[in-house]
Image (tube, rainbow, N blue to C red; front, side, top):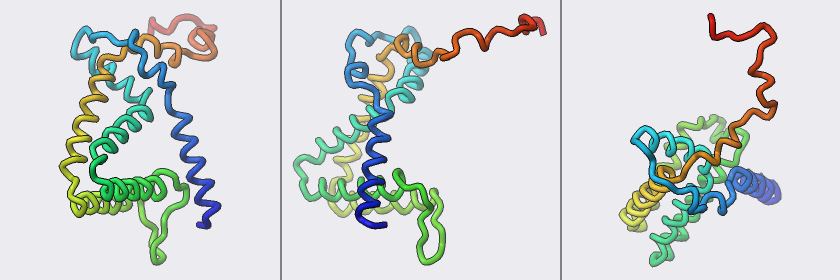
Amino acid sequence: MSTAEFAVTFKEAGRSVIATRRPWREFLDPLSLSLPSSLSDATSRISQNLTRFLSNYCLVVLLLIFLGLIYHPFSMIVFFLVFVAWFVLYFSRDDPIRVFGFELGDFVLVIILGLATGLALALTGVFVNVLISLAIGAMVVCLHAALKGTEDALGDLQDPFGDTLLESPRGDYSGI
């Protein structure tokens, strides 16, 4: 892959992430926060909000990891290189990766990248920092997702054709 192709691929993948990101004003709206009425409501909210705001949550967790590494500049550089490796080799590619004539499947690639990430974290001595940052990130994400009301998300789920597809010319099917 040439440098120009890499730049185009990187740019398209970045646009894809930005396109799926919801507006920060919607994500951070304090008026949409409320306590869930039950555990079932909380889990339903978490599921819906994780789907709806996945890109936003990923950026929040990456920011928390960055803040956890702020006093470790070498580790931050290694973390950035590992992030770029994940982005290029796993998230932004369309063609399978071939090494010595063998095609690497996604599962093998995830294992290799996961081991490389773990090795990089272990060698730089910030494994605990990243683990704590991930735990804090998971708590922040779950707390926000549970408190964020999903009533405003109903507009996204409505059928663009209205109720016309729900009506049958033969009548109601509920009697079957």
